[in-house]
Image (cartoon, rainbow, N blue to C red):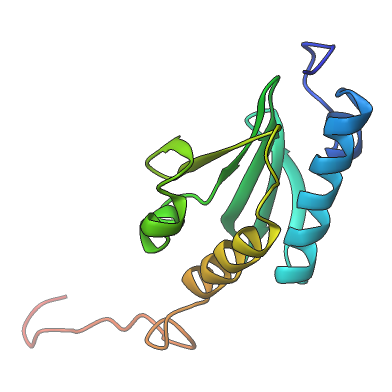
Length: 138
């Protein structure tokens, strides 16, 4: 559990606020996300570690007293509904209890799924906005 209530300046400071055993898990989640999304930028948003890609939020993670949470915002959890059924969570959130093995392979698949979701759609790539002028109008 975080010992300080102040907003962390960066992900290192966030992780440092937890007991050593939880720090190790959070660090491994961080590494897992970095490997699955090497182009993602790391920041703090809503006072928790956040990764962004292509100007969009990719994934968040957070530590708590008895679990760690991954937020595959906004729809990542739906695709993995069957795999995530054994874990607590809500729409777009999953909680992994600290007293059970953390499914890092599942986290990797969620991140890769989110990377695909954040890629520009083919119709968005290089698409220029055009103005249609109607004859007789200015």
